[in-house]
Amino acid sequence: FKLVKIKGEFVKHKYPQIDEVFIVIDGKMSIEFETETIEIKSGEMIVVPKGTKHKPYARKEAKIMLFEPKETNNTGDITNELTAENDQWI
Image (cartoon, rainbow, N blue to C red; front, top):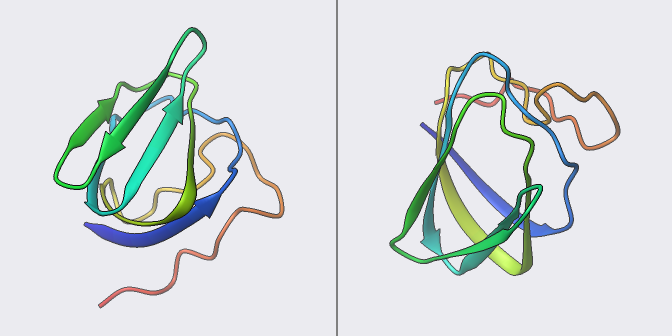
C-alpha cells in the first residue's frame, strides 16, 4: 500500500508487468487513457491493467492509496523530473 497526495498534471506512463490500483481516500482525480478520461471520487477505485498507458492528475489536492509492489517506480516506464525516490516506507 502506498499513500500519496497528488495535485496537477503528471506524466503519461505504463507498467508492463503489473496492474495498478488507485483508491481515492479524499478528493477526486482523473486518469487519462488513450481514448477516454475517467474521474474517480472519494471512496471509489480503479484498476489500470498492465501495459495500459495512462496519466493520473488532480485539479485540487487528492489523497490516494495505491496497491503496487514496493519497488514500483511512480512514473512506470518513464524516468524524468517527476520520478520520485522510492524510500519512504513505514
